[in-house]
Length: 287
Image (tube, rainbow, N blue to C red):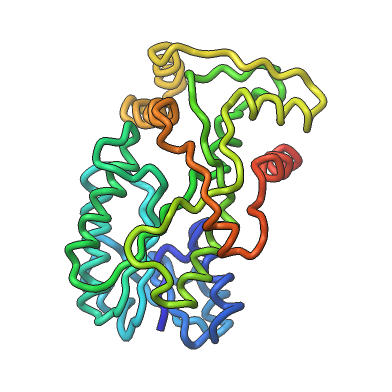
């Protein structure tokens, strides 16, 4: 029984879909906060149980009989995030899982400029100490974040962001498929994987040029000083802590934390990964 947590989220949902093409539905279980949202999976023979990383007793039931548990990282940062991941890892071990897998990130490290990467490093420490084999999926930076940072640039013609460095922007769909491949082939990776990245590391200068090409409009990339960017964000109602975390992404990219490009993802997929241009084309067509 392979258990996937967060199976109604953007990444978790696609991982389950990929898994169902590789293993029988009766071997797949999901742990979700709201089982009603996973009714379509239940209808296809997937075992659906309620599980929350804040409720160890609930997780014991959700993870019952698990051979592998994939802990999909929570959308939080800091101490609370690591605490929830620890609860999930402990529940997986208690349930008798032979292997615990976790969606980490490239650049995971205790000294990263980006809080999420420090949290991933702390979670990986928990995995090393948990007593069973683990695999940490070092996912490339989500390409949807690049689309999000574009904001109104296609309309305004100006992309004003802090100074950055190259980032290996990687599609959710590719990372989900890779996770499914790894779950279906137990023990393929021991410990952290190499960075699971798309084929290019691109800066926001590159992204402005790609957006201009896709829209046929001129997009000018301008550099906002960090302090000014923080002020603009908080002025728009973004909490100060969130603004600092977003700035951490730019500081980390300037330090080269997300610049590495690695062939592992392409090998897992058996094809070239989806390009950022393709992700942006889809994003702009939906806008």
